[in-house]
Amino acid sequence: MQPKLLLTPGEKMDFFELWKFDSLIIQNFTAQFSEILPEDFIQKVLVEKLNTKLLVVGENFRYGFGARGDVSLLRTNANFETMTSPLLDSEGQSISSSRIRELIGRGDVARANELLGYSTFLNGRVVAGAGRGRQIGFPTLNLETDRECLPANGVYAGMAVLDGGNQYKAAVNLGINPSFHGTQFKIEVHLLDYDVKSTPRSVRLYFMKRLRDEMKFESVDRLKAQIDKDVQICGKLDMEIKLLKGP
Image 1 (tube, rainbow, N blue to C red):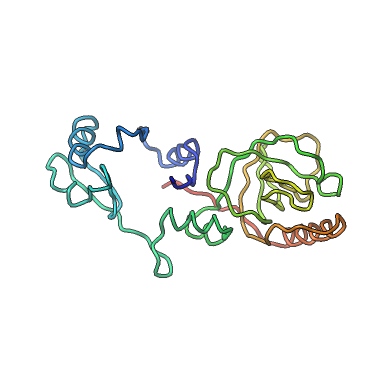
Image 2: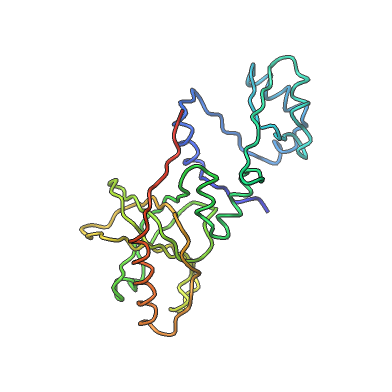
């Protein structure tokens, strides 16, 4: 099973633009490409296709069929110079995409944000919902997203940036709405201090802190009481979006 992507291809390209790269090459990882031997990758791709003169990779970079290639093999080729970037660590553990993916997957978005250096987010399209939030006094925006790596089901404090650029604190529920016997995964966002004049088309939602697990309540009144507590907690939190910055 392939690991879930932390960013969509479009989001990655947005990040690359911050660093003012002249060009970006995207290689589809086909079955045929995955079978290239390390030596052929160096000669056919790096030398012949890309005319590489300087290559910068992480010190644990692996490539070629079965990930058999390593940095020492790269350095045997005289056509280009190979430089390595040291691995970063935090609290004695290396910072890696797999570690960040694991933190997000269990809902520890605050720690994931620390390691990422920016606030983890998703880009969502606003879609029609069942209207239950409005019926109980907490209207929500329902989102669909292309993001693969999402926080664990539960309630989160976050910041929402609407397509017009305005920012709002948000109480976010990820899950299936067990109190209403739901079975379909939903992303529901309640905006604090939001005067609904028109429904936005899209939302960039930043996750700041996990508040609790998703729960099934015995009555609507108990659900409303808990949501009210969640919203109050969100309102009191000092939340600031941390963006990835260019050089």
